[in-house]
Length: 381
Image 1 (spheres, rainbow, N blue to C red):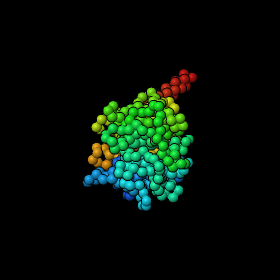
Image 2 (spheres, one colour; image 1 turned 90 degrees about the horizontal axis):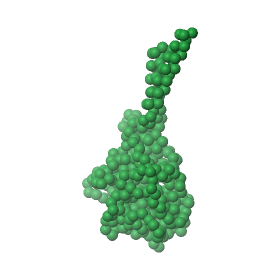
Image 3 (cartoon, rainbow, N blue to C red; image 1 turned 180 degrees about the vertical axis):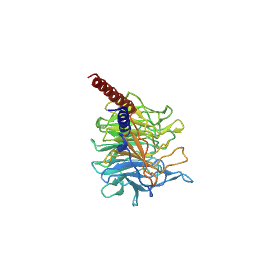
Image 4 (cartoon, rainbow, N blue to C red; image 1 turned 120 degrees about the horizontal axis):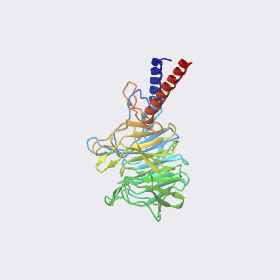
């Protein structure tokens, strides 16, 4: 084996290692031609029954600020948005929340300023219906909700209640069987806040809460878990913490069992950071994908469990400009993909393990050294 062959082998090893993640990147062959209006503060959730992400409402920043209604669904496999023209439907509003309830195969929606109300989206028939309850959390904005499949209930915590600029700390439970709201009174609970996020984490069978604005304490980076069956809240001391944020977005990756946190506001500035929470290890870690959506807050984020990607839509950068772009994030490859590529085949940058080039170099050097030793032994004999 001569030196030229060695050089070729070495180059092949390096290139092979550095492009080993190409198959993880998503390729977009055409623009999305039909999509929702640019918006912020919309509710978004994944409907596994129909294999689509669902968004409702939000606020448009075009011209004069105005509230939006309308139901849209996004198919990742088809890379397409479709508007569902439905009557009845929830009133136009922003900073509302909805969650998918798998036992009843429905999406529960709650929130509103002028007309706070509970709505159910029947995933089988793709139809909205209002749920009439004897009690409810009342006026609610920038709150958080999560569905506990073990108890078949939706938990709502905090948010703005229309009584000034401070958030609340009240806790409510919506029973998907009895169709009623009940206020809960745990012994301990997180600080009153708004603009926080919650998800149900299947790896620990607990609801995870983080971030938000707690007045007058300010933006928070704490991590809490809620045990629904015992009505118990526990503050954790994880290794690492996310930034102190408000109006970030979080979804639960049920395939890899990780919480994915994106964007939000730090101080007065929007960011585009991607954070991962591993509940089994109780660790937060920031990831550094090569490409990512622009700085934003109040975006929609929902995990597509059928395709193992988190889908992001819209958001706002500065309170004046909203987005109408669609992105997909893969935890496994740490790649954000802009699903609205131009007519040419495009891909976002590859998120490589920084150890791979070093590994390739080591392998290449080892191959050269072994070859030289073998050549010397051959000459000696």
